[in-house]
Image (tube, rainbow, N blue to C red):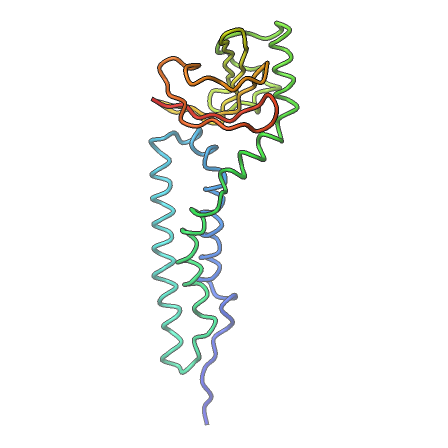
Length: 209
């Protein structure tokens, strides 16, 4: 009497490892979206996402085959559906979770002491004005071109640390000397798309055409 062949547990299968790897890649891409945007630019990042979606499609096809392959040898499919369910769920999960906001929160608090030092140096005229490149020791405080922008409006000074610089727009953490919210007209030629307070003197803004 022959016994039905048994497959190893699904978590030991290559398809499960592949799906987990692709899923982690998508979650990390969402978390570091702004970092990748500065590195790859607005033109190359969509191609990177297309590559990831192609890997998801491969995972779906492989997972479906893995799920269906249990039937001919009489094995209960049970856990063999896990890779398929994970691959189907990962894209809406990654898009639904506020991963980009988590990165912004981490970045703000991680580099806040250094940004405060930059503000102090600007206020004591030991750093430049307008748009200027930061010394190497402070370059991590502002992304894109590693620059900051110093602006003034009706007697109040602002210092913008970029989290994103792309063609036609930018975003970042802006320091307000007198804790006055940055006015919509602060950036000539650009509209204030988003503006929200973070803590006293600090705001997060997005500007665009």
